[in-house]
Length: 223
Image (cartoon, rainbow, N blue to C red; front, side, top):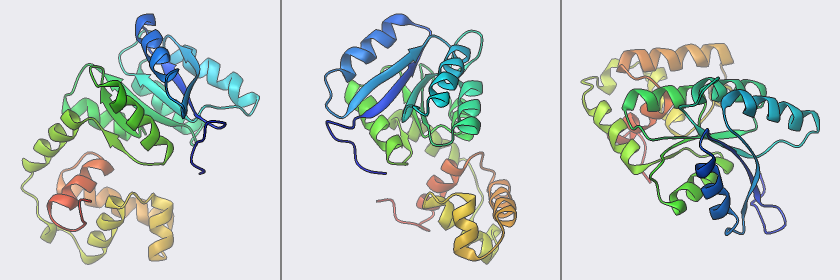
C-alpha cells in the first residue's frame, strides 16, 4: 500500500455514540496533513449501514476508529462484521476500559489496534497510521496489561513441537494463516490448526498475545 500524501490522505471513519467525541476527533484530524475524516456514525448498526453504501460505490474508508460500548450494536460485533465483509478496512478499537479480556476480544474480532479514550491525540494518529500500514498498535497501558497476563502463564517453549515453534515465530512476525501456509508449504487449514494448537498449549487467547509471548521468550527480536 502506498504511503499517504497530502493528495491521498488516510481516510478515517469515526464510530462513537458521543457526538462530542466525534467532533473532537474531527477537529484534531482536520489539523493533520495525512489523515482526513471520511464519515461518522453514532453506533455499530449505523456504521455498517453507512459502510454498505460506501462499498456499493467502491469508496470504503481505510481505517475505522471504533468505540466499543455503544447502543444497538456494540463495537466488538461491528468490528467482527466489518472484517468479515470488508477485510481491507482496518479497525482501531477505542474504549475507556483497559481490562485484558476486553482487549483480547477486540483483537480477536480483528481490530488492528486498541486505544484508551484518554490517549493523547498524537497517539490516536499513530494508531491510525499503524493500522493503515497493516501493523498492530496498542496503547502502552494496554500493552502492559497484556504483558502482565502473559507473565502469569507458566508455559514454556518446550511445550511446543519444532513445527509449532516455527508457526509461533511466523505469527509473531505478523503473518496471516495464508502467509504461514505458503511459507511452510502446508495447507491454510493445517496452518490454522497449528496456530490454534500453539495458543491452546500456551494458554493464550490471541495472536497478539502469542507475539508478545514469543518476544518475552526470546524467539523473535522485540525491535
